[in-house]
Image (cartoon, rainbow, N blue to C red; front, top):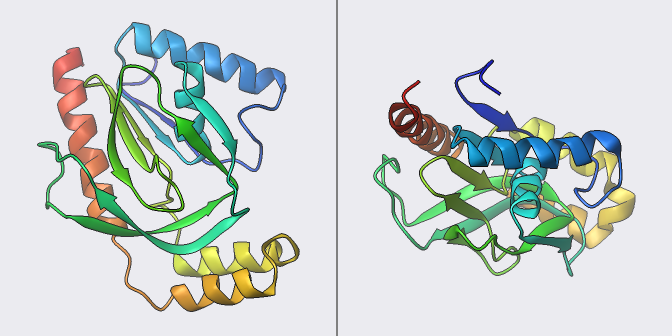
Length: 188
């Protein structure tokens, strides 16, 4: 657990409720990181893994596979959210989502399709459903790969949404700002 200053749980094609041994070990590790107040960030699958490990719920989204650019609304501002924004446009690619946050979590961002887009637990855990690490080209390739699941209408809407600007750099700065504050607090 102390091998790294901070931990990041990334996306995955698996679901957090799958009974794979590595997912179960991952949930146990999240609990240990939380107990030790180690700086941790979860993105997409990682966001869901952290939420479920700490008592939240994750389910398949009623709309199916969400793809393309989605705009989320910031509900609560934090000092590490520099530059400040009221909304963020980010790439998404997920069919599961957090439907109930862990008891200690504070909801930071939401949109109609994904009500738990970003949350924080204490000063050491940040969860983010969208993919700030995705490029538009990668997002399009993912949509082409999953076109049969998305359906033609969803595919068209998703590809068309790629014309919109995204705030990946802003969220990159936010994650670094969050981790900087968390590392200072943890004494690393």
